[in-house]
Length: 229
Image 1 (cartoon, one colour):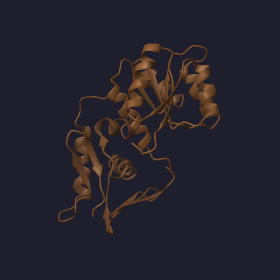
Image 2 (cartoon, one colour):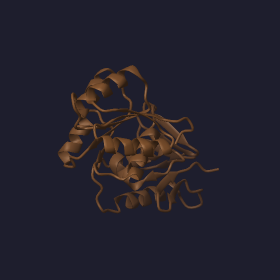
Image 3 (cartoon, helix red, strand yellow):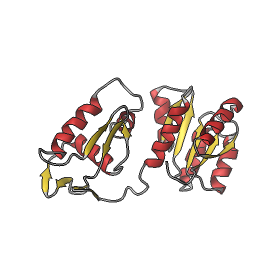
Image 4 (cartoon, one colour):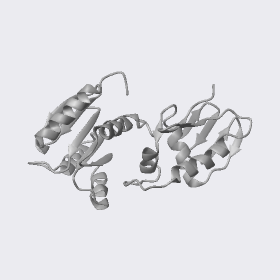
């Protein structure tokens, strides 16, 4: 997490849950502003700057999705995590289509809430760059080419997307859940070794024999693209 305390706007009408979340996030270094209604949350988000928002879907006066839509209409793109007791795929899709960046179903573990917030903060702010470089590795997003020290690397479309995701977040631990959600667009997490299989194929192409490995497995956590020394 960044050294500066992230400022979070939390909009939730359940007093017990709100108190628990505020206490937990505060102990983790977040600065939390709590509002109880959708209208109050909207007014606060329009008047002040926040690093993140957590908003319940079902709120009095103005529902959470309407709040998000109104913010996006005003070009306010603070990352938003939607909380909801509704877990159906259609409900998650509607939350994301409204402009939410992530969706967490109630009840949830505080560790997962904190992890999702930190993942939102790790997302790159500037996604306009068309040429990325990490150490000896370079990817051209327009020409769809990849090189390592001048060596051309041919990738399948999913491998290319996976590598782009890794290269936009160098030296960061990326969990399997993050990869499934952001690269495969899964909003539910199946029991699968899909990520491991694709990482293995990508690693064999990126890290050729005799080259310093760039893609690393982080035991118990996930994977990392780390520039060679």
